Length: 362
Length: 113
Image (tube, rainbow over the protein chains, first blue to last red):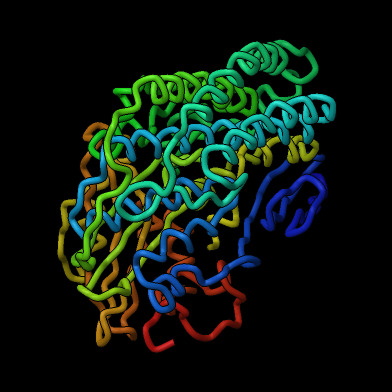
């Protein structure tokens, strides 16, 4: 029998963007076992939301759960609070929420793809992808006022309108970006050494994805057609603006790259449909009601299903707020996905999981 | 949201009868401090019924051990480990030290803390 070695990776490591700790047991460079630990960044946000802040202020607090997908948190929280105070959001606000969620998804997917490229040893592709992503950071700033942590969704609606000038800016940027996206697809799909590195790396089957309750692009790359946008038409009219689910079957790093790239095309179509068909209405529904009862909301964040549970007690402060981030659901599959792979593939596999510990540990 | 109230003694069997990996998606486990009691909740969605969310609820006193569902849903260890730390409740075959430091004594999501 070969000798086994234990290799710790994280909480700070060159190939990890997040404070996650893995311990790999390897035998002849092949991973035979993995453990994961996340106890480095718990910030007590759920506790703060139920003790320090009034329920209308909480949307600004949960926007700080994550820099990358803050619009998903503020929107999911606003939706769950709106259920508790029993109000309907104006139609224009729903469309604007979808616009920012999809802009956010594009920049998040491009960030993940750039890190997969970097961790696969392609620094030039990392820089190219980050350069293309920058256009979306600027668009988000133009729409929301901030590059990250945009306090755009608020309880009852949205905080800002979309001007005709910014809508035109989005259209103009998309004209430039579409050929750039085609170029990225070509590289990620056809570059021989990149695909050699990414194919079969970190693969899980659709059966494993179901058994381990995987969510987001991680699940869809394995062939599990789970996307909350398909299931929450009552909260945001996704199908009306052209949402289509994207899946692959191989379940490896290569398939995850392709799912994210193809989802960017879907996001571009949704955004174009939103700005071309933006309904005229108020931006917010005003009410003086207090939250009562309990409610849950699911929202498809860039990494998968984001889940919010809230319980109100007819006061300004919530009784309980529970946040379940997508990475939280994927930890089990992350651990299993490493098994059987060479240790040298670990950086690319980690990046393809797109983990967000800031969300997970809150 | 379909709420199924049950006892802590029966909840594991009810989840075992309900859960099918090809049909149900385990979302998360949650707990709410109600003062004297703690309500423990297990949330599920359905792959084929998009709007269906089922939640199993069981109330316990803080000294009661919650049965693990890891033998039914292997990925549930993450949710059980988090709840053990943040709520300071006992869950079968689950140790502290996943979200907080292992020597962290109090559950920050309990009302008294």
